[in-house]
Figure (spheres, rainbow, N blue to C red):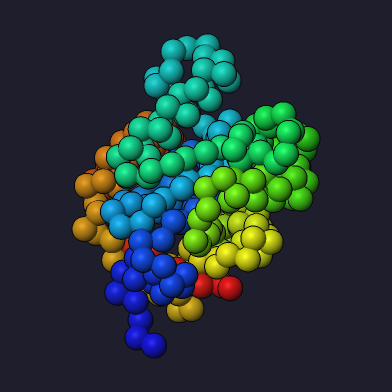
Length: 256
Ligand SMILES: [Zn+2]
């Protein structure tokens, strides 16, 4: 089999459906853009994209001056939800949901907001679990509960394929690793193909796609996440000072 030329070609081959419905599982508001902006903008042109965001990024740092002095967590979360909505518009994502909130909530359970679990840096570029265990976080919750919620969304939106992180979870953030486990378990339970997004640059077991033709949409979406980052000299500068390349190259592989 020849290597697919585009993400669309790969996903169409994976699910044997033209213009498939693609459910993408991301951990925090901004990951759809920071991790996969080019990929999302590319797929949005030719597929139906359904985004499931697992948390509201409550534990994230914030760029000073974006919110007024003394802002509350409620205000911060509202701002991040607004940023996510704007970024999804910029990328062309057609539908978006938060895990734990209907229709991404199992049965008749009350809404649950899975909280950002936070992280600490283990070394440059690799995150690990934060200290302390808040029982409300995404990683403290039972995986089974989260899988049931994602399966409810799958029943409601009928995707043909699920797209999620590989087991390294982009850069090791505990919420990204949990999002990987969630996507994998739900794909398996729903008998849907799972396509993973590569964490490591140019990892050889993935098909790699140049998405630089979608730069305008990716940069516009990055500009929506002003609490988290700035774009300076064609690079992302995160609130913590880390630099990252623009998300214009993605590696994908079919897992099952
Ligand atoms: Zn994240």
